[in-house]
Length: 84
Image (cartoon, rainbow, N blue to C red):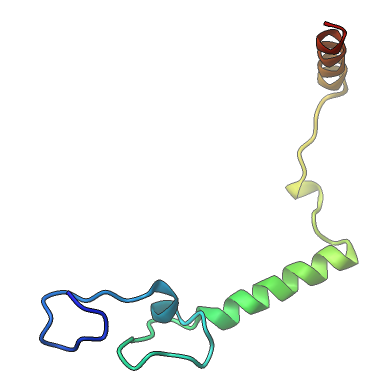
């Protein structure tokens, strides 16, 4: 078993980041890139950052809610525990 040891090995080990192309232009000679996810990751993080900064994320779809009665019940329970 080898990493970069060539075709005469019985098994190959590669680093996930190299196989998925997470480091942009860097690719070790012994690795084959099966995807170019680095650009997609950077793009996704930039979009996330932009949406958070402009206030368009999170929306109601990504937010948990609680019924008012459940909130009051929780608050009463917490007050009782605090009072001991």
